[in-house]
Image 1 (cartoon, rainbow, N blue to C red):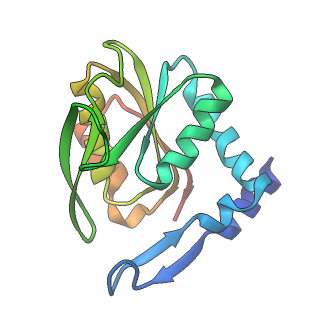
Image 2: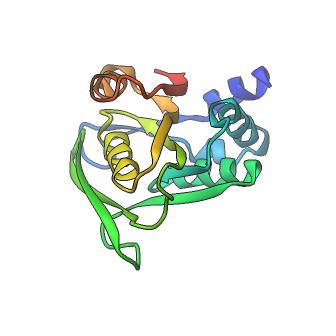
Image 3: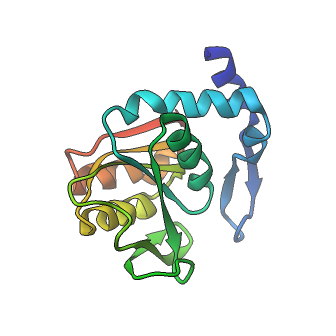
Length: 177
């Protein structure tokens, strides 16, 4: 397993000036294309998903890891999407990111009151998306058991922002750069 995680880490590539000049984008798509690496990442999240009722995934790449994890655990997947993508009544949250702001939504009936939910995303940068996801799950009556990410960009302070706002919610990142 450790060898697969090492390989997975080696497949993350840097893309300069994407999506805007001055941004260094961490591209996980090569990792997704390598079956053993993808499986190693999903397996690494399993211990964090003990006793949860659902896995919520943050758009868009967080969907991939979250849905695979939910499938492997035989539990539900809840998409947290960008504004205007869900067809039914939604809760909305705006958030900031390192290059602007956006809005995410979740169906109002996606989570049963009291349901324990693990939130998964691909990259933890400033923490804005994860914080918006936490607020959405809580607004729907769910209990966030943790936030899991494949990659954390330590210098952008996302973990600190989450811990300051929600000290009881653990953050697990497989790789920290």
